[in-house]
Structure formats: C-alpha cells, structure tokens
Image (cartoon, rainbow, N blue to C red):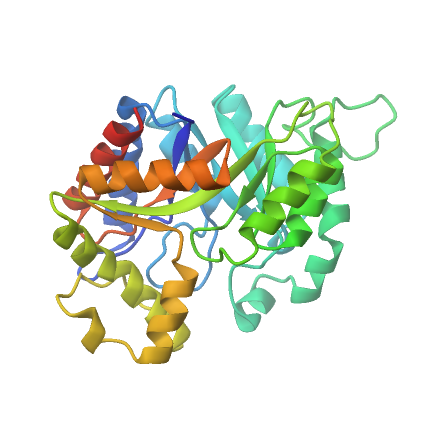
Length: 326
C-alpha cells in the first residue's frame, strides 16, 4: 500500500480547551508514529474557536519534540499571512532542531476571513503574489552566497521539503512548473481533483528538489467497530461544516444520532459535495473504500483526516486505518 499520513487541526471540542487539544495532538502523533504513519501535518487557521493550530510552527515544534521518527510539518502554512523570510527562518529553526523530519506545505488562501486577515497585517490581494512569494521562500532555503544581502538564519542551506497545497488548478500548475510535490485538498474541496492531478502530472518539470511528480490526496476517514457507529462519529464533521456555512463556527460538537434532523436539504447537499472524498465504516468497509479510492485516483500518498469528537474513538480510528493500510 502507498504511504499514509495524518492531517490534524488540533480540534477543540465542546467541554474542552486548547491545552487539552494540544495534549491530544501529541498523543495522537505518538500513536501514529508507532503505527507507521509517514507524516503528521498541522494546518494554519485563524479565528476559528474549534481549531487550535493557528501558531502552526510552534505546534509543529511541540509535536516533533515529542516524537522521534515521524515527519512533522505544515499542511499548510498560509503564505499570504507571512513574509517568506519569516517562514524560512521558522522552518529553518525547526529543521535545525529536528534534522530530516520537517515538511513545509504552502497554501495561498489566508485560512480566515477578511477582518482576521486585516488583523494579521496582510490582505487577500497578497495571494496574487503567491508565485513570487514561493520563489522568494525557496531562494532563502538555498545556501547563502557571500554577497547575499538578506539571508535566512537559520534557514539558508536547510533541506526542508516544500510542498504546494491547493484545491484548484492554480496550485497544480504552479507545483508542476516549479517541480514541487503537490497536495490536493480533496478532503473538503474535491471538485477539481481529477483535473488538477492530470494537469500536475502532465506538465510537471523535474527540479533539483523533485525528479518526478509526487501527488498526495486528502481523504476523510472515520473507522469504528461498526458502520453505524462510524457514521454516527462522522456527524461531528458534518455538523462542523454546516455550522461554518451558517456563519457560526464554534467548538467541535459531539456526534448526534439523527443528522437528518440537523441540516436542511440544501445544507445536506453542500456537505455531501464537500465531503465526497470520505470513507466511513468498520474495518472491512474502510479497507475496501480506501483501496477503491487509491485505485481510482492513483495518489502517491494519502493524507488522512479524522475529525472525531471523542479522543479515544479518534485513536481507535487511527489504529483501524493503519491496520487497513498495512
């Protein structure tokens, strides 16, 4: 089976807080390492009450410090929110602390709303400069030259793998042109997945960083003792999407028995479209579903995300997924 990894948002569940979310994140990362997962990535979001991974580089350092082998990284850092030099310094520092274990995935969305983007001192139109910002960041990771006026310290000469993230053709085109690995956000925006993958593989130009295309796909997976229990656990993710669309993002809610009574028909249609790339069920269902997804889309790696309310149930899902993929 292909490599498989974890995407974590450090969820803050109802009745919990950020401190507990961080303890759960480290515990899950340690479990994923023991189970043979390849990477443990954290995502940058801001002004989201149920997501504790806003200071992504800080949390990556915490997770990397509590593990020893698994790769730890950002899936991703939203580059419009930062200067390329700051990102190079932060990830150069992480790479110096944890050699050979740090990944940097870059996205061009701000990961928040207009008001919060302004509070971050950056603006939506900065996303237009994303290709130039990526090129500048890559240059900071190159060995510094004697006449270089500005250099990343640490960062210059660091071997930090840089990925481009995306949910449209834009990221696929840029990743192909720059010869970088590409991760598609099919776990929440799958509409352009097949077209983006085809474009990336067709137009890929080998680079000093990557000789041939390497594509990772996000996949929602919730595994439990039965199909019915897994579907019930998945209602946490479904509720979160509806709450976000209603303009009321909050703490991560517990699962409910009747999701049909919770959403309207248009909301159901929206959620089912956004979460179309999902495998939910018992061990056998998950094994079959993942195999079918891989056979159809041929990713080089899977990034598994499981937004489960109860931490013990999330751990168990992680174990069942590893067993299905091993």
